[in-house]
Length: 349
Ligand code: NAD
Ligand code: DAU
Image (cartoon, rainbow, N blue to C red; front, top):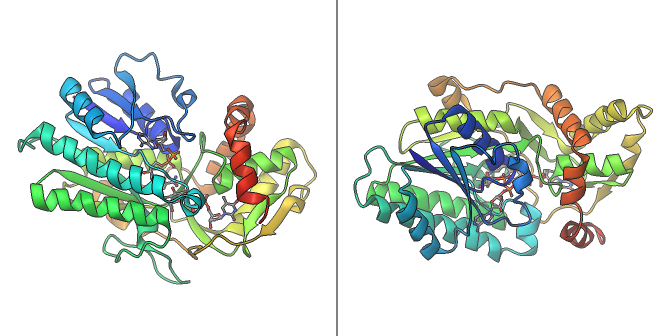
């Protein structure tokens, strides 16, 4: 089968591409990616020469391009991860999120509908989404698959819209779809605009670690390779037309997480315990900052037997070690445009 994975040069996509290329030699994996600032082929350097892997540089907002690759490669399934993914960037410039996350997703749905022309037997469109579509929780409760959508940032609104379109194509045209909504991922290859890799980078450099507001917002963190394993399970064994929530059962207040990270970094860098905590700097809060996300993954666990394979402490140590061992990767992605982004995002906070 020819499998189209979109956004495979990004953080989660690169782990998913590697898992599918290595585990399913009878699939040919086509990785379609625009290579925005977040896409990096270095993430897949070890996969590049594999016989069952091809990279396609392209943009999902370009419907004519999608039509041409669908007709050339006759994809049997699509695993859709390409997106603009950073909430702060969506606040600064929402239109790119509407273009890629909404229009790009609809283009892909249409490309599938046309290419598969009503013969949907054995075909699949799998849409990877986020828990942010459910909005913001108070101190109690968990997001389930039936929680009403309540997106509050331009990013989450664009992902919510894309989820609605995917379900509309299932109900209206019978397109075989699956969806998953996952909590915050962390791990190797995470772009250092997101909290954990940004903090690792700044601690390493001895620079202030910006914590929004009072650091009391809560996120549910999942190691990226466990998310990739969940996607594999849902892709192969999940039920068509269904949605699966994916989470780490691992809630942390931002400030507690950053303190733990500082301590791990002190240990790994041979600094005196407590030294890196002095870098923590409280800065102006994110606009519309969601208070708490927490996922109920019991459907995925009971139906498909999935469970996270590493604890947060193990995953965080693996992540820190990866960044310390891959200094060149970090240097390359934090040069050039990253510096302009960083200045604009943090200078006046
Ligand atoms: P990322 O920003 O690291 O990667 C996105 C990838 O998509 C990049 O390689 C980029 O070049 C590509 N891309 C962007 N616009 C494109 C376009 N128009 N055409 C083709 N390619 C394009 O994102 P990520 O964190 O790996 O997230 C992947 C997916 O998982 C997204 O759909 C995101 O909403 C979802 N998700 C992310 C998280 C998380 O914690 N990071 C959690 C749940 C769900
Ligand atoms: O929940 C899933 C979502 O998790 C994904 O859909 C998104 O693609 C992904 O970016 C992530 O969104 P968040 O906004 O939760 O992640 P981020 O790493 O940007 O922020 C995590 C928390 O840390 C959040 O409460 C904001 C806070 N924060 C973030 C940054 C970048 C800070 O305090 N300081 C910072 O500098």
